[in-house]
Figure 1 (spheres, rainbow, N blue to C red):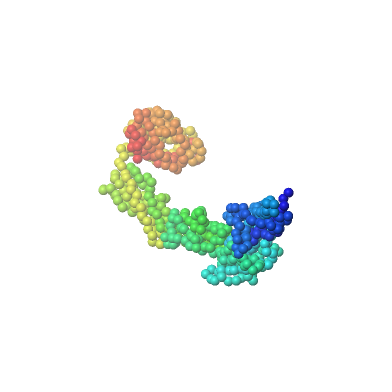
Figure 2 (figure 1 turned 90 degrees about the horizontal axis):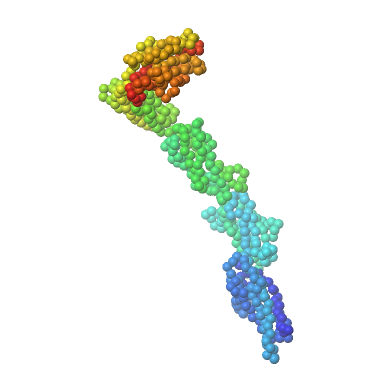
Length: 517
């Protein structure tokens, strides 16, 4: 049976970053050898250490973890030797826990007027205090560019003893300070809450004077104060007629671009700062009005022509704002040409007839209302065609208006003479086409060929439906391999079957349609 027993006055200790090392507890020894028993402490390394200062032993936490606990942070061993030389000992473990008290704020960033709550945590499982209710609380404010001032009078209690709150009334950095009761003066400081005044400041570039359609306009809100948790949104709230452009934000949303898709007008852009603690966003808007520099383009897409062709020019491939003026100029023509530009009454269109083979250049100059100009030169070429014009041997118009089943027969004879005759359906050796008016529907006519004897429609089986009052180009191939090209315009009559040919011309193209104008 053991002759010694040992007990600790405090079997459990709490250490924290405010208290530092704590004295080891007193102990009692019982038993016959208690009077001569000696005690020694050993620490449960590496988290714990026994140190001695001024003749007093302390328990110190040596670990690096935020929290550590051990059922045997240290062990007390007492031992004694009896008169008969018998040695006896007894041990008892000291449990301890290291905790990190903290003073926490419910927000890292705030807006003026936000209510901020500060809570002290002892680090113990029951979140209890280590020193009762005698702690002192302070509130410190460091304004922007100013000295720290005491705002403790604004720090108010709540229903919880270790909680305080205050209203962040000024822009700056607030810190809560808690001093534990007692003479050691241990202090716990809170993290800082930064109070920001949200500001939306938007600038854009380039200036309106040099903004053009298709070129990006950058809107920049980098100079704004955007608290964490807030979101910056962009919106186009006004745009010119015909525009459908939207804002394109960058990754952090403080910048966005708008690319005008019309030549002129006014855009209004809003930057909207949405704050979690406020129902309505903070809005900043910027507007700009612009008139684009005109962009003159090609006046035609058809640049290869035959001599004698009428070539038309227009503005379809150009861009220009309202109020612009236009000028067409024949800047170059082949030697010997007498071609002249014919300008429309409003100046938006022009045409010329190529009269000599070679190159022609037409310059278009567009000037907007602000005097900005743009020019483009379009080159066309004209070639002599080997095609032979057909000789029209019929007086126009050719009318079939008797309401019977007769047709208009269009013939090409062996001497390249072109005729149109109102007649009964008949197939002669030179008959080319039969035109039945108003049979497939009002304002149309059926066109049939000679079924290959001796003519056949090119790229059509043996017939087509043509529209009235429209110039149609008809391509034919003779059974000997020769090609012909006709241009025909007709009107339909009042009765089914009637038609009137109002225009008729054509070419003998030889062995290839590519030689036809």
